Amino acid sequence: MNTYEEKLSLLSEMIAFAQIDGQVNEREYQLLSIVASQLSIEQDVFEGLFDNKAKKVVIKSEHQRILQFYRLALLMHADGVLHINEQIAIREMGINMGLSPYAMRSVLAEMKKSPSGLIDPDVLLALFRAQHN
Image 1 (cartoon, rainbow, N blue to C red):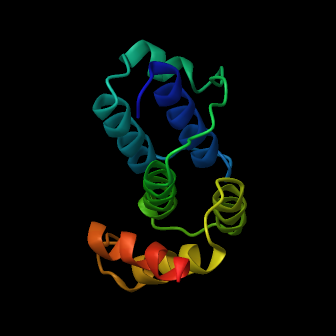
Image 2 (spheres, rainbow, N blue to C red):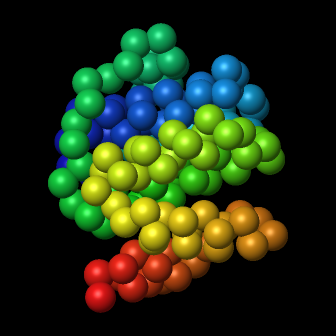
């Protein structure tokens, strides 16, 4: 992530995704707060993104798009409930980011199999690389 605007856009997209099922529960909020902290977004700015979305900035780097997809997938699993609207939205968002639908499906399947919902970063990248061949 290069610019502050890109970071705000990323976080705003995650907040909108968390709100798809009508509420942001405590675990989702905590994950969003951690991401905001890692991106060096001030708490008041973070809170403001719940009411006022940041301007959308397209992520150019494929690596960063894959990372954003994974963050969204983690957020989707954070509350322990896989809402149908979340499943539809994450696929649409991934496609809009230019990611392979097959790779996204593989990542989500791996996360579902994992007891913690986490997957190794090398496995994540390998699933997307496999679609390049």
